Image (tube, rainbow, N blue to C red):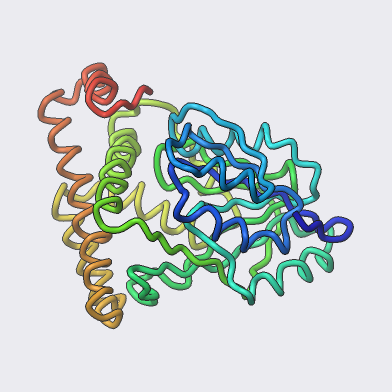
Length: 307
């Protein structure tokens, strides 16, 4: 791995499970800026670990619980001696504009800056999803070592910094471009739906302590989305809310301008997925009668989610 000078060194943490199709692309894009790449693998059965280690990454394997638990373990155990830490997903890569910008930003940054936000492009079958509220999607992806932690939620977890931390925005992009196909996408979002169900049920039944630290953090986009989800969307009637959300995204936020592939994306991600979450909630509420102990039992026995 190439090491940037002085305080600009970066340790990148990535979670993997059967990512042989993506991991080389991801690591190669990080080589110009990463002093260390630390991968937490959930016992992949393909060549993910072999490929990652051949490219110089350090790999640890650990049983999966959820993303937040796994990533925080990675932060706590990556052994980073760098000034900065970066979060990446295996199906993401950095564009040349960000690779050029980031080293300069890290070398020139003032001491008061704790983290950097990066704009993410989402590609779907090669189509850049520019509308429907998906771009610009800004994410805190680089922060000073020891300053960031990940929210302890089952879905939609963000990196949070200490209160009053100052951040800045980079102009460059990272790209989310999953190559595994629609069957994988559906299976993945079915799993996401179960995790999202936990957070929405938790808002109503208080199944476990809720991590609301994002709402006090310096992240206006993420904070607004979280407030809308927890305090507005979650209180709307099941099924109706997923319909409203799709119509809002596709028409009011101009998702239709993304064309034919964009329609598939917005329908599947903005309607089908949201409806699936609601059907899962409806089913578990009807079967449990709203009894918290029964909800937890069903989550454990049928969804593999142990609270």
